[in-house]
Every structure is written in C-alpha cells, then in structure tokens.
Amino acid sequence: MTEEVNFHLDVAKEQMQEAISHLENVLGKIRAGKANPQMLRTVKVDYYGVLTPLAQAANVSTPDAQTIAVQPFDKGLIAEIEQAIVDANLGFNPSNNGEKVIINVPPLTEDRRRDLVKQAKVEIENAKVSIRNIRQKANDEMKKLGKDGLSEDMVRDAEASVQELTNTYSAKIDVVYTAKEAEIMTV
Image 1: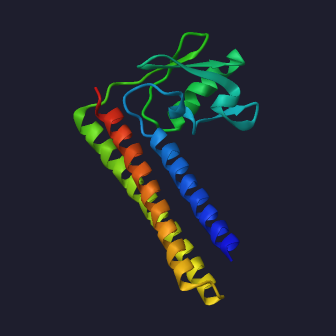
Image 2: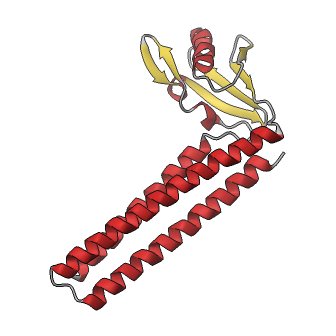
C-alpha cells in the first residue's frame, strides 16, 4: 500500500512543479520595462505561407535593456516580421534598418507598474488555487486508499505529507511573486 501512497505523492509533487513552471511562464510574459526576447514568444510570422513562431524565422536578442533586435534568417521577411509584431498587439512600434527589426521598449509609468503587479497577483492566486486543487485531489486519493484497507495512521501521515508539499510549493510561489514584483517596480 505504501507504494500507492508514494505514487500519489509523486504525482502531486510533479503537478505542483508543473503549476510553478506554468506560473513562471505566464509571469515571463508580463513585461517589466526591460527588453526580453520572451516578450515576442507569442508572435507568429507568415514564413512562405506558413505561420511560424518568430524564433524559428529570426534570431531575437536584446542588445541593451531597452531594445529588442530581430535578425531574420531571410532579409525578405523584414516587412512581414514588422507587421506580425504590430498584429500581435503587444504595444510595440517596430522599425527596421534594412538588416533587422528594432523594437524600443518604452520605460513603464508608475501606474502601469502597479497594474502589472496587480496582474501578477492574479496569476499568483491562480497558481495557489491550482496547488490547493492538487492537494484536494491527492487527499481524496489517500482517503480512497484508506477505504481500500490502508490504516488510518498511514492515511493521516500521507495527508500530512501532502500538506507539507502544499506548504513548500506555496512558499515557492511567494518567492516567485516577490522576485517578479521587485522586477516590475524597479525603475
């Protein structure tokens, strides 16, 4: 029976780690006033009739904290890349120098920074809800095992282990949030 308990604990741990990874991915899309190639991750460009992620059609880099440079593998794509960035509605105004597309990332206003922190808080709360749902599901599995013959002590110990996992991953979420808030509020 303990193998089943360990299996359910491992599944819960894996799901909680996935929730953290998803959170980091979502928070990476919230721009903090610094140029970051991840800002263009959702942009797809028409590459010879096929919608292709920008990273597969060009080299995206950040030469400095306020600039994103997009160097297409085929210079004929410059106009399509510019249009794709505008169409993505990211609030950027791209330009080109004939060689590459250049995006100046404007500094954020204080109000916009506060809005971004609120947006980050919403994502943090979503991640915490996800963690709690995983905890509930794992505890339900432990109770089922209890009905199938697992001793009450083992069920209680397993539920305590699930709670410990939940506390650990909730603390990780708080650390991620603190880092993101500091990143957003730093001028």
